[in-house]
Image (cartoon, rainbow, N blue to C red):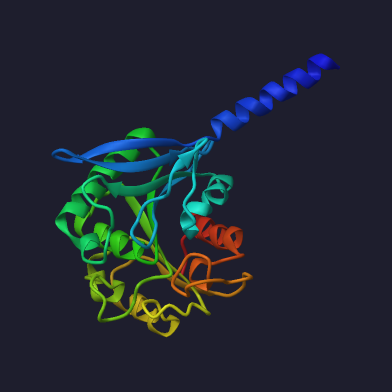
Length: 256
């Protein structure tokens, strides 16, 4: 009996060890390194390269866990449980904040290109770019300008759609995108940069996407704080598992 208990404990410890992520500092430009969090899912069929909103970053990595409160960062366990490898794009060490303008600039695109290459070296699974809030500016720009065949598709959540905001998603050259695109948005998102009524403009611009879909969702609970922050409807608070489940289902079977 004691042998069985010890064996079970060792198996659990091994499983926990395997579940821990790793922090990398990827050389992306001369004398510049970009942080990347990586965690693999056993038997993964795809990898999601996540781009958090705000100023970017995923918080400190403690005991193999990214500690940031962003919707995508705190949802890492849900992506893993869906059988998806997780990579989170952090920040280059020559900046403290990824603003709207920076996210469409040549330096940022160079960083994304090298991080994408690094991710592909860790897994041969198809890579989906997944952005939320300000991260949608990054993912859209990267998909348009890199035109990398390693990018299997694009997921945009809580998209920046205000026309006067630099890099807003509808204002980018969406006609250049020839890959599947999922747009996920909360009906009650009250952020002025991301008003739900402006989101259909993204679908209208995706004239060459082979498949595209808008999922306007509801649900969640207990929003608090800034309406543009991660713990309000803008960050799918209280419905993280459901939101990630819908993303994962669509990645597996993209359909209009």
